[in-house]
Image (cartoon, rainbow, N blue to C red; front, side, top):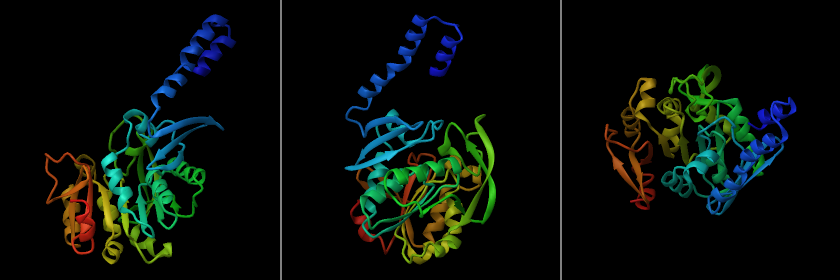
Length: 308
């Protein structure tokens, strides 16, 4: 709108008065934002260097982020729209990761959880995986903005195979980009990106510990776990995973298949409810939750006692 108004004025399509009036109608939204973000998690918004910087105060931590400009579901826009971002899940994710923990952020997007963990404790190690270059570039920029190392951010996805595969890149809902065409939207394009098996990747990370996995890969979660089954068996980390029936159906499985997989490894599945976890046997048509926690029956008994 700004460029169009200026072009109309410079090309004598509108006079000076009309130009000023139209531009003010656009500019005044700045004052609306000043009121809109007052006392919110977003402390301020800065425009510079051809980008928009969102500054957050998250659990006492100062975090700065840039976003993908055309992604309607990006973290900063979600905060602007709803005032929070998966608030119940956030509490579990942030409080369950302790100093010295090693975390895998699979489907890291632009880095909201990665940044919160890294800023929570200098001894927390986070490996972030994001296959889509445009999003990955924002992840890297956000790490740099927050004075974090970028060596543990990887521009490939995880699955049950190694190679390059077609992804369906959703320009409007980047978070819904996947190896399956989830929304079947006109804004979706087909692009090839790299994926690898966690069991092949993990030995190259140079660590001998794994405490927590966050996996949000738009329906392909079971594939990730299949490709990392030996790593999970060896280290038995806490696992937080998104599981949507409509998304997993695109990959020809049901969330209950994932639950059964983890049951064989000694894990139980739990849903998150205001400050507590509730064990479930299976996902049904009445299940409203979309994020789930897998805890090993023996190793994580102490963790469970804090959340029941």
